[in-house]
Length: 168
Image 1 (tube, rainbow, N blue to C red):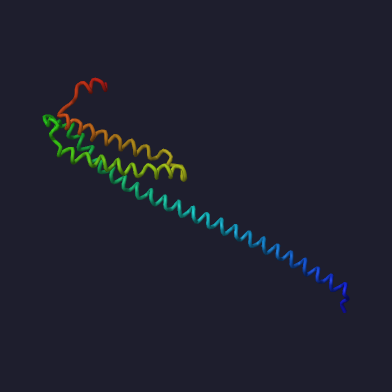
Image 2: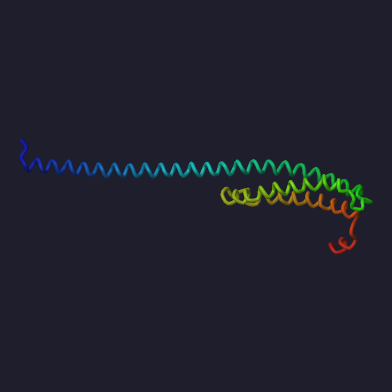
């Protein structure tokens, strides 16, 4: 038979065990919540990284296509300069300008789309994205320079001796 003193002691033991179980349950719930938030944060970061990588891949493909086309135009311009087909045009060949200039503009436009994405990729992914685009930009600038030189010859109808002398 339980006495009054024994019953009070038993109630206190159950109360203490209940409190300990409650504290453990709250701690477990807190831990599970933190793990859930951590997983959610990783998923959001992964989704954002995936979107950035996807955007970069799309713009890089456009840029590659424009560079290939620009290379063809630059090669054609070099052949025209070498063959001196621009001689005697007296700047009246606006048809040639209307063919070449839009391609240079398109390549520069796609590069403008690429630059902010490339900067973000360099900040997040590092590696090849830090300086890898520099070679592409130099290639583009060389091609644009060749086409621009040809277009200047077409517009002017020949070399400008004064400008040639200054640039040397």
